[in-house]
Length: 188
Image (cartoon, rainbow, N blue to C red; front, top):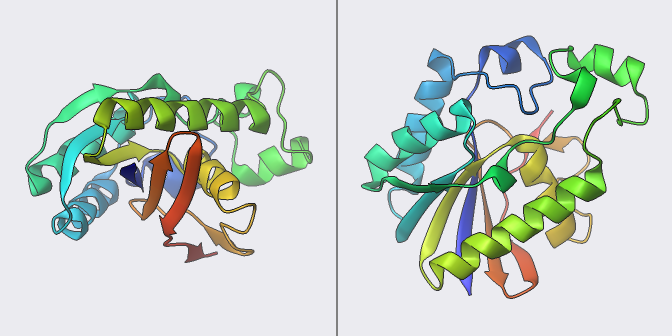
């Protein structure tokens, strides 16, 4: 059994502007760096022994800031922790994306089923590598929400909530079983 704290990266300028990021490699802004420092302080009391991240700059920088607070270095980057690939929608504002793609499936974008499969396989890979050591995994909001939906049978995130920047969601991975043991949803 492996405990994994899924942490969403800190704020970027595109987050602030309401733009769809996906695989676009957007760095943290100053607010995001402060959020990452706060997340590091929040995680400091845990018994975390492994720190991993998505290779995208915003997640990697968040992980490094958290690592300084908890005394860990990023030991691995997992492509499977990247945000959903949104295809032609990357760079659009969220409102333009919803108007252009009411079914939430942009041209050439990764489907939700593909994202779910990738996210769950990656969590299992991380758990297999970590064994019984507790892990901090810095990833992205869409990916984390997908994991929460799967692991909670669709009840999380709750209606009107989202996965906020630098929030921590705790899951437990035991073989193929992934369950939520700590949830921190934020009202919209």
